[in-house]
Image 1 (cartoon, rainbow, N blue to C red):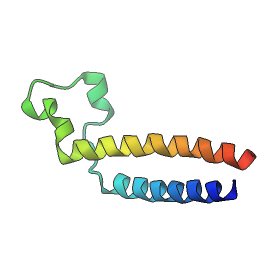
Image 2: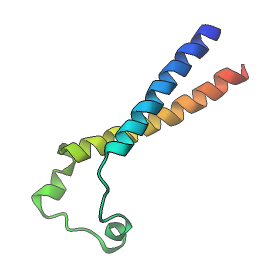
Image 3: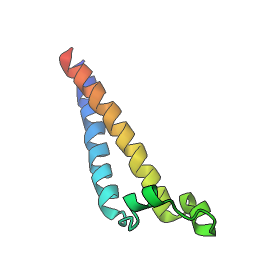
Amino acid sequence: MTVVKYIVSAIYIIICIALIIIATIQTKDANGGSEAIMGSSTSNFYEKNKGRTKEGKMKRSTVTLGIIFIVMTIVLGIINVM
């Protein structure tokens, strides 16, 4: 069980470092919460294809790494209890 704990811990550290790097590289979203309140114009080409841009891919990877981070935290907590 000790070997599994070390392997999961190493993967967890790699995910943490990747999440920190990707989060700091991202550009700041200027609209922020005002876009959610006032609505945004989704009729232009950029808004419809925002997920295909570099910023869209970085946001998607940040969310994915965040979810993996949460799951790995729970797994490490369970492994440490055993």
